[in-house]
Image (cartoon, rainbow, N blue to C red; front, side, top):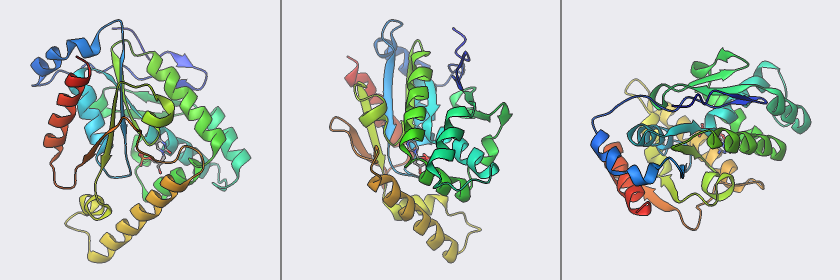
Length: 258
Ligand code: DC
């Protein structure tokens, strides 16, 4: 297995996954989809909280592909912006941060580690504050250009293939990807999934509002808005479990790679 942690300017690619799983047999039947010669690219796009990262990780593990969480890259830039005490709307300063920050995604899909300038920041990226800043800085075209360049570079290091999750993978980053999913669920369902038993109704309302605000910003921005690629398979997971959606995704990959 090649070492894919090669440093490329400011970005570094993760290792391809090494873990095994109960569905190895299924993965083996998808051999054609993951041939050594033609790396398979699978795009997983959709709004916040639709299950992209859970499903993207599982899909990558099952198929033994590299997994790139592109949202984590925007979140890492957001953290760098927060730490530098910059205004997220200050386009030039934010672009400079995006161009110079060293962002690395390392490890297996199920335990992806995000490093910012060498520091493991995985546990600092999941706050609502970072989510909101990431949503703002991802409207910056210079930031997007840099992230897309790095995503293509990291993906090119994957010999078997790669699963990327994000908002613009099937429309902009890899418009020719042979397999594209667009995962969705109602805002209420997505908010409910974040709503723990210890949360109260006011918290649910706040989560729902944050989701709606981010959906609106991600879908209406000028540069690469969240959109369904013409050839994407849309999966509404409102009424389905993760396992059911995963099974449908695996079937689709198999069909599309025949
Ligand atoms: O998927 P996520 O919630 O971790 O993404 C954080 C933010 O980054 C989200 O508001 C939209 C943005 N993003 C993007 O614009 N393009 C991507 N490919 C991935 C994320």
